[in-house]
Length: 287
Image (cartoon, rainbow, N blue to C red; front, side):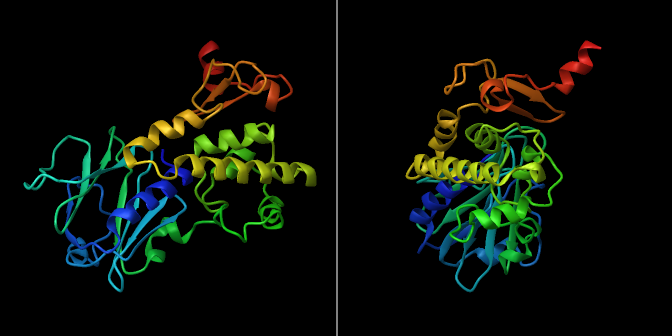
């Protein structure tokens, strides 16, 4: 899933190619992709793109005083830029193509989604706040006013585990499964530790890890073309997606806890005092 660093890089990549150019056509291909109907997608056509911005994991393409095209790439979505798009309109089918945006004079991008779950979403709205997912977003962790005190206030009454809190978009915007694993590893904390139980020093350590991990990931991603960002993300991860490999900090084996539709990775030595966490799915299989 594209998370804050990748979406930030995508916003920068698209801004350099879209701002000042005119939208010729917006073609929805997958029936499931479009989540709004008023204004219609045709309201974007003939308008000049005035800016590209990120809200959490959402991409916002603004057209001056016209509507916004807001995209959420979900778990399996991606964006593919092309300097020259086929002249013939795409046909709906079983392929990954969900939406095509063509610019006047040629070029544009395809939005694709692999798999069968079809969670990718496109919204055509007059105001970004009309998108429900944007309206409920918590503070952006890269914003100047996201201070240690502000972060501590968010955690103070949280009775949930840290992993779930970090992934909750209404608490902090833009962090998903991968970077929550990376942040907790950098902070040397168990993903199952309760947020409200953190001491002042632990809160400061988690805040520092969060800011460092995200800033470093953004810098690694910055300037990369859209088709390079997936590989760039994977290359920078220390524990997420690396089950069975040695921890780059201590050399212990990276472990995994599996859930119904996701999993988390962690290092026992760095994060849980050397004790492996119970893998609920594996435990059920062994009974």
